[in-house]
Length: 110
Image 1 (cartoon, helix red, strand yellow):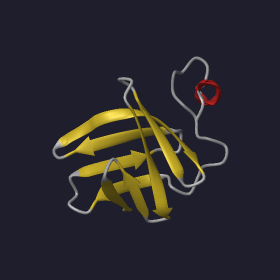
Image 2 (image 1 turned 180 degrees about the vertical axis):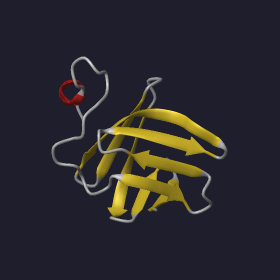
Image 3 (image 1 turned 30 degrees about the horizontal axis):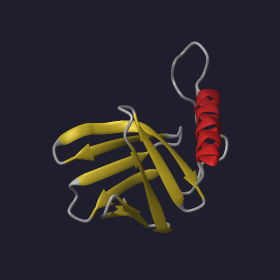
Image 4 (image 1 turned 60 degrees about the vertical axis):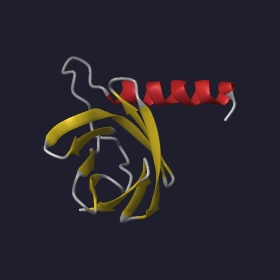
């Protein structure tokens, strides 16, 4: 991806995120057309759990640490991009509707 297209993608993602925030309440609203991957995704050992929320946010638990990481995400086709609230970025690929490959881990839908 060229730097120009990366900048454009970032601007579009920022615009979409800003458009999803309701004015006044500070809470995000549900996307008008949710993707089919919304829900809980868990590693086979149960150690890492990603909850993809319908409003474009995620909440990740690790071991006994609930909400270890939180941020926003965007799904394009079978690809997912994550933007952690601390500034960390990551991505993954949905192999099918029940399997997600992310960060060297395999997640299954729960």
